[in-house]
Length: 131
Ligand SMILES: [Cu+2]
Image (cartoon, rainbow, N blue to C red; front, side, top):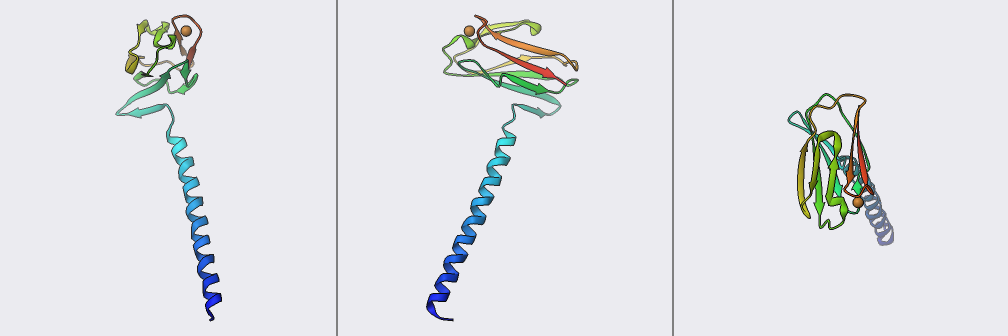
C-alpha cells in the first residue's frame, strides 16, 4: 500500500466516524426534546409545569386524571400581568413572585375535565385537559 492510499483511507475513516458521531448527536437531541415535556409523574404525584412570562407556556397541556396533581407555575423576571394569576376552578388568585415557583394543589382531576388559568386582565390564559 502506498502512502497516498493510506492517507485517503485514514481521511475516509475520520469522515465516516464524524458522520456517525454527528448522527448520534442528532438522535440525542431528539431524545432531549422528548424529555422536556411539562408533565412529570414522580412518587405518585403528577406535576404540571407552566411558565409565566408574557403569557403562559405551554398554552395547552394534556395530563392524566385520577392522580394527585400539582401545578408548578414558574416565573422568571416576570414583570407583566401574567404574574397576576387566577385559576378559578382551584380557587386560586395570587400575584406570583417576579421570579420563583408557585405550587398550586390541583387535587385529583376527573377525566374529561379541564382547568383554565387566566391572567388578572384576561389577556393570557392556559388550559390543562385531563384525560
Ligand atoms: Cu394580562
